[in-house]
Length: 462
Image 1 (tube, helix red, strand yellow):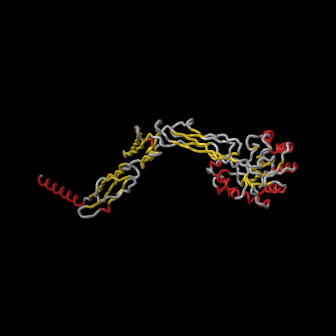
Image 2 (cartoon, rainbow, N blue to C red; image 1 turned 90 degrees about the vertical axis):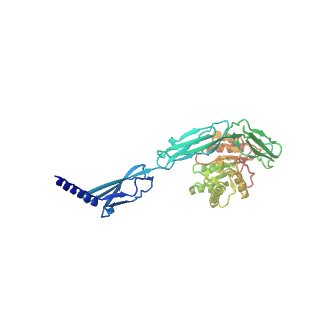
Image 3 (cartoon, rainbow, N blue to C red; image 1 turned 60 degrees about the vertical axis):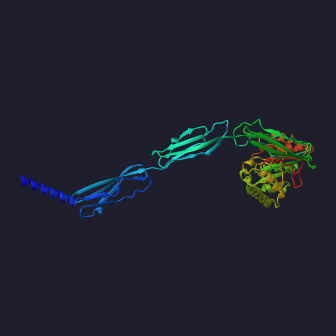
């Protein structure tokens, strides 16, 4: 019995010895590791062997690592050798250690009106992992500071601050209605156009002090000053310059200058020309470029003794009034067209909207002041009007157009009448013969504008 035990023990020892000698092992050079989001996993190293042999090449490695998602992953090492199956694993943690970003709209230091509450200008929160987390921003208000605190899903924290300075440092803004430079004839009428005042903190509608006056009967230059001060002592002042000039001696001659804008048109212009021919009346046509199909009407009007003047090639306010270059490019186009049709260069022009238009402010502040000077420098005579038929406005009937014209005629002025011969002006066509009859019956003389005609111009408002 004792001998049998010894034999069994010996055999067990031999088996254990063989197991130890031939059993493979996997050895990891490092244990569990941590990597950051988007960081590539780099294998730290491993070995595979038994007592006699290097088995590293026999190891199969697999992992489920997603370096774009926070979490815990495994790298599995598997070694199959003889009848041995050895497995080992390494834990890999993917973490986010980047703090989110808070973006403040507006300034970090803000002046706030002393009598007002700060109105939040806005903020945004963004995290490299969580995306838009604006809704998670905690806002803490104090008297002179606002704190914005944001924590992402990994507890990375960001803090921003906005300083509030309760002080009004902005001066009020006075905006003059109408032009800041006005020219009127002696004995004419000056009417204050008014102003608007805006302040970031205070209501100053009744606080503007207007100083100065205009003597319409004395030639000279007058300054109207507009002053205002807000409750914090910030001041503003603007001036309006009014020039009173002598009325030209040639102003007022009992003549009527019928002018037609925006043509020619195929359904109105021919019939206007027929009436003018029958009545032996000469007029002035401020033409546009409607393409070559209507060129014959420009040629007919010229051949019948009417003045062909320049209005615009495009009549596109947003283009022609956006720069000096654009205006003259447009003017040159219509000038070249007219010259090719009638053989002479016209130097008589009318600005789209007139020289007093304010729509040009939307595209280039002050352009009309520059253009009126420059066209004169280039030898042009520009004409506005002092009688508006309003056929481009609210006068839709021939009666309204007729009375708008005849009720404003005077022997004491150069009567320049604004009408239109574009395709929708049937009422203008219907009123024309009656207007001519009234003028003839009351001793007026009809003429076409020439370079010798006294200019009738508006005050420039831009």
